[in-house]
Length: 367
Image (cartoon, rainbow, N blue to C red; front, side, top):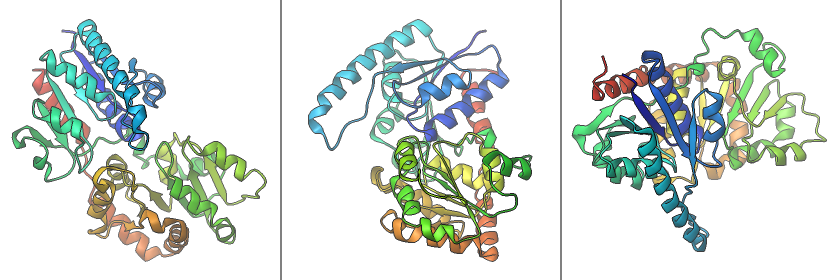
C-alpha cells in the first residue's frame, strides 16, 4: 500500500528541522510512503526541504502585520488564495494523514484537511500554543507536545508528551575535533564561544558582539558567530576593514555536528526546538530569550533550564551590555561550565521522533 502523508509548516528552523526529522523517520520505516511538504512561498523551507530530498509546494500565505494594519487586507487575500490552493493539493495528492508542525502554511492545509475529514496531527513545539493550533487542536487526531500543562490549550485525551524531534546532525559524539577546527579555520585547541541567533539571526545578539569587538580582541578565545541571513550583508559591510583574528562570522551553519564538537560555551535564543537540541548537546549555555514572541514563551522555555541550574539567562534588554562579558567570564570558569553542561544533559528528552512516528503509524494502522 502506497501511503501518502503531507507535512506542513515552516518559516524558521524551529519548525523545519523537526519536520525533516519526522519525514526521515517515516521514510526509513516505509520507503514506499509518498511524502509531500507544503510550506510558505519565500520562506526558508522552500530551499531547505528540496535540499533534503523531499518535494514541496509553496502557498502565498503570510502572517498578520501588527505594525502595518492597513497591509492586512493583502494578508487576508493571500490567506483565501492559500486555502483554495491547499484544497487543490488535498484533492490531487489525496493524503491518508496530514502533519502540521507550525508556521504560516500549517493553518490553511490543516483547516482544509478538517473540511475534507482527512485525519491530521499537530506537533506543538512551544510551551505556548498559538491561536491557529488551539482552534485546530480540538479536531486533531493527536497533539504531540514538549512541555507539561498543555491541556490548558488542547483536549487532554489527545495529547502525547513526546518532546521535540532534533536533527540527527546535532549528535557530535563521533565528530573529530581536528576536523571541526579545520572546517571553521580556528586554531586547534582554542576555546570557542558559539553564538547562534537562529536561522534568521538575532539583532540583539549581533549588536552585543559589535559593541565588544575591542574586548574580544584581547581574549584568548575564538568567537564563532552565526549572524543569520537577514543581517549578514550588513555585518559584513561593517566589519570589512577590521582585523578579526579571533572572530569568525557566517550567515548560516550547516555542520552542526562539528560546531557543537568544538563549542566551549553556546549563546542562543531559547526557541523550544533549539533548547531540545542544546539539551542533547550538553554544553554550557547562555540563553537570551527573544522578546518578539507571543506570551513571552521563550522566557518560559528558558526558565525550565535556569531553574535546574542548566543554563544562564540574560534578558534581551540587558544583552548588549552584559552578554559578551558574561560569556567571556563563563568560558574561563571550568567548574561552572561543568555543572551547567551536566545539568543541561540531564534534561534531554531522547526518542522524540520515534515516539511521534510510532503514533502516526498506529493511526494509519501501519505495522
